[in-house]
Length: 123
Image (cartoon, rainbow, N blue to C red; front, side, top):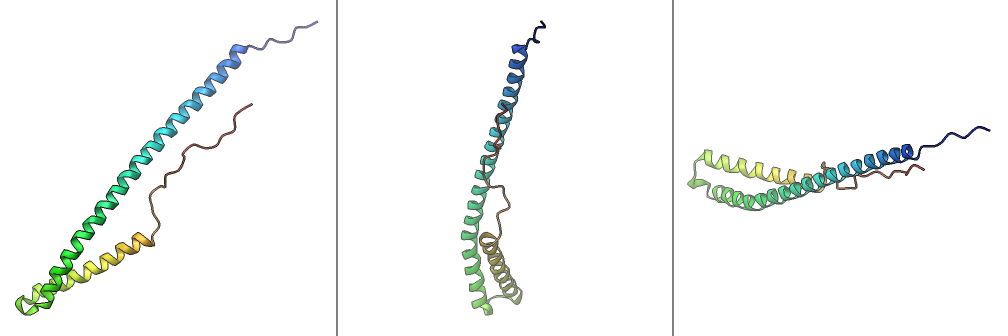
């Protein structure tokens, strides 16, 4: 009678250990990727807040200055009045563009989501 070939449990265990190590490394890399995405999202949010405050502070200052110059146009030179009118037009158009982009445009940045994929365990 012939003996069945012996299955080396150490070989099967080492294959399982390699798979487990690969899965652990993949999970570590996915965690690092997610943490980088979180930091990027935080920076992007801070930048949006800062830009919003710049607009909130600068827009009224520019508007008041331009309106004073335009309403008192006889006290200023024609070049100054033209510059104030142009600044008022450009500021108004850029504000409309900013609000359009803020409200209607899709967000180009990557949304935070799990970076791990659902995998089936080998049997």
